Image 1 (tube, one colour):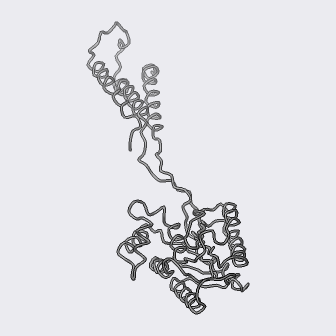
Image 2 (image 1 turned 135 degrees about the horizontal axis):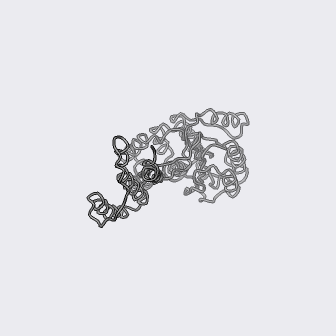
Image 3 (image 1 turned 45 degrees about the vertical axis):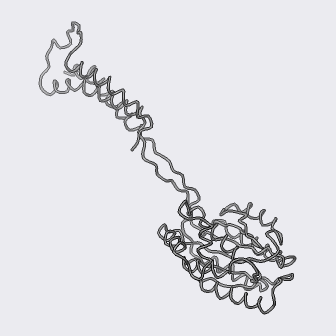
Length: 339
């Protein structure tokens, strides 16, 4: 417990001095017939409680004006849903029908997610988070409408898109201990470094890895940036599933067909290791199966808002003060008159 106005407790000092004077009768009195008829027994005991009760009322009043409060506590607004990061390929090869196919599938997907937190990342040569995790469906739809091919560069960095999506899911929890740059460097090795492992363990300790997933919309062909298997390896270590909705490239990819086929195969294999699945957007039945697959993922508590606040406790000493004051008034004015 804390006090908002602790300095007001200094009022107890003159109050204590006054009480001592009154108790020891160190003051100039005056003639009174109040105690001519001396009372005895239980009635006398109650009559003597007047002074302690009155000063108790004043003491509680001083405590009340000092405003006692609880220590800070967190009040959460939460509901049950999922946290989903959407990573959309906007490279040059998505020009035309490919990007429109993706936008149609994503748009329908967003409409089915009223209780899920959804973020949108776009990637080409670079990657950018354009919508932070939100439940604002209208904001997501408006942002989706503005997405065009080549917005983040002409080349395709699937790895950067995946990593930026991971950062979107965990940026709030990183605090000062972890940074996005160091985490990226730590996963872009042959094996996850101690820094990445520490990050995973800390998120697991805080129970932050549940109920999260990443969905990638791409042609599966990458030609720049970190390899997709690096961020997917991190997701696998965290137990987070990644899904791919693959579309056919509608323009040149700048990658040899054999290499492109190998990239697609490697991406699909890496996605499957996370427990996720690989769907083909040109197959209506597979897209429908994709929607159903996401719906089967168990919902968990999502904290929408967390506010640190204190609870005011002054009402309790105020009530105590008023009660004791009423008791003092009763003793002084009514108790002695009771036969």
